[in-house]
Picture 1 (spheres, rainbow, N blue to C red):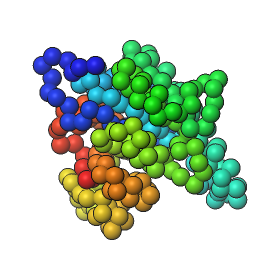
Picture 2: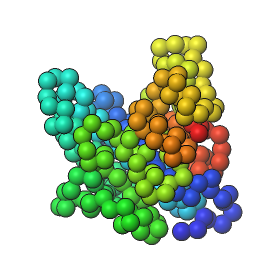
Picture 3: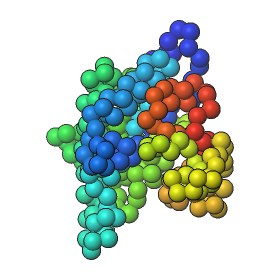
Length: 246
């Protein structure tokens, strides 16, 4: 789909939007907030329809379950991680419902096969969906235990030839800082930083596997405040929002 008349050419033609499960949660940190789901769906639909950008979404499951929580309680790590993958599918279905409600066609594809509720992830099929103007929600992580949804986002971005990863944050954090801004009031935000600097400084952007993969594959990452209205479209229009890791 071509950009709407009178709008600027998008900065990237295809992106992966990485969302944490916690960003979708109610104020208590658990479950789903309908207002947040609607806002995200509206922002994605607006960016997609106005700019013609292909958007795939990789979502976490931390609002329902985190694998490391189970492992910390003595559960087998692989078993706990599979439970986390199922949690991401729940979030994927909720996002699909929200997107459809605002008029955006979408598909949920999962690395853990659940034919009753979602399509299996097949790279070429995902690309065809994107080309037809659908938002593709990629759930189930990589389908393997011991890998985070950050790594899944990096892997899927490379597979579908995305040109960037947009990593949405929540709780008021609007980029990458020299330290945790919630703890250190003197922390300053980077406008731009390299993948290697993120690794060397131990900054919490994505896990080290994902950052290294993005560096090796020359994938830029924009870290931004997901819940500030208009940010998704603003980034795709080329405005300086959040922190660019490249």
